[in-house]
Each structure stands twice: as structure tokens, then as C-alpha cells.
Image (spheres, rainbow, N blue to C red):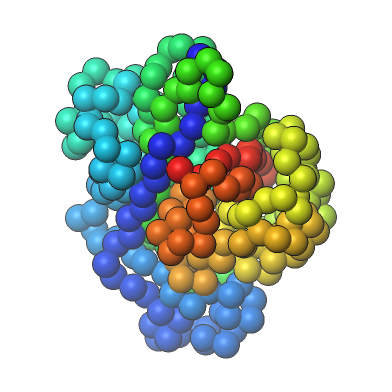
Length: 315
């Protein structure tokens, strides 16, 4: 095989919307305080009877329908998540069971906020090697399960959701639709973003993450474009992990993608961790902001101070 491409993408968010005004009734905060510091207006919150695999399955079903494929066509399921409550069965296996996918390889990928782009690269490599032919790659997180709703420094950030992509192998002679990945981490700084403890709780060192993201990541994102042989000014879209508008906007500006549509779904969805990139990407496609074949940089970063990015072509 000559690589892979994204055949379709889909997303899902729970119905319940939590506004800044709602949060102001829960902790000492305000709409102005939240908008000024992180740019978020609303976020979607899943109910107690909506586990993360259900969110993932809804998004995957939409992507499958958009690709015109059936569950039986899929032979690899990868789910990027860090909020699954149970260790086994893993989330990928539960998604496969919900959708009726027979005998897939089913694995979870836990790289937190960079999980989707890591999983996308892993699926691309698997298809290139001929070990699978069609894959479901899903980013899904239920951050509300791991949030201390009395801590205003974190509870104002998070939301729940899922996004999914269907990948198909490209035959020889067809240009791949997923470029080479650039990935790595700063393991000695892994403490800067954490989901730890019993029960597990999300915590971060906000200033450390902000400095790292705005000073170190622009050059790394440019290198991801170089690997794909696409200049930043030729990008049609940039979909960064939707962490914080104060990180997204300077990072995009320093990247130099002057002609690109910049995803800002964080304002409506909050930080949905591994779901944020496919969720934002799916919405841009749904809105008609991007067209088939357009080059788009997907760049995840955050938990573990890990990062992964690649240029893809729109389905």
C-alpha cells in the first residue's frame, strides 16, 4: 500500500450545555473572567448514563455513514481516550461491540490531549504496512468524570464529546491523504498536566503549559508542515488541540498559516481532550469552511507534554 486517507469524519456532543453563567452559580467565577482567560462560552456535559464509549460510538457511526461503509468493512478500531473508567474491556472493544464490528483489532491510545493525532498516525502506519485495510480512529473523552467541580481553575475549561475518522488504504499510485507524523514529548515535565488519584482528578500547571505551548510548539508545528512538504501559508486549515483560545491564537499566528481557517471550537465546546481535534475538524467540514482535498494541519499537544501533528487532505 501507498499510505492512507481520511474517507469521512463525524462528531458527537451530549445534549446538556453548561454555560459560563451556570458555572458562576457553582464556583467563584464569572462569564467575563472565563472569556478573558480562556475564551470559552459554553461546553457540553454528558450525563451519568452516557459513558465515554457511547460518545465514541455515536461519532463513529456518523463517520461510517458519511463514508458509505458498514461496520463489517472495518478491521481496526483505535480509540484515543484518557477518561475510560474501566480498564477492560477497553473502550475500542466496547465501541466495536456497540456498532457490531466483527473481529477487529481494537486498542485504546492514551496520550491525553494529543491522543487523536497519535492514534491517526498509528492507524496510518498500520494501513501502510498492510496489517489493516480500513480503520476507525476515534478521539473521545468525558472530562466531566475527572473534574473537581469546586476548582474554578480547571472546571471552567472542560467539556465532553467525541470525533471519529474513517481511514482507508490508498493503492499504489494514489497520493496519500495523511502526511508523515511529527511526534514527541517532554517526559520530565509530565507533571504539568495530570489525571491522577482515586478518584482520578484533572489538574495542570497552567502557566507552565502556556509558556511551553506558545514558545516551543510553533517551531514543532512548522516542522510537521515541512515533513509533509506543505508551506504554512499553503494550508487551508489549522486544527490545533482546543485547549485555550489564548494558546490557539498565538500558536497559529507564529506558525504563519496566514491563509488558513483556524479552528476555534474551544469557545463552544471547551477542552474535550482527545476529542477536540476531530470534533473541531468535523465541524469545519460540516460548515463548508473546508473543501475536499484541502491541506489541513492537525496538531495535538498537552497531557504528558506530548505532541503529534500531521498534514491531512480533507475528505
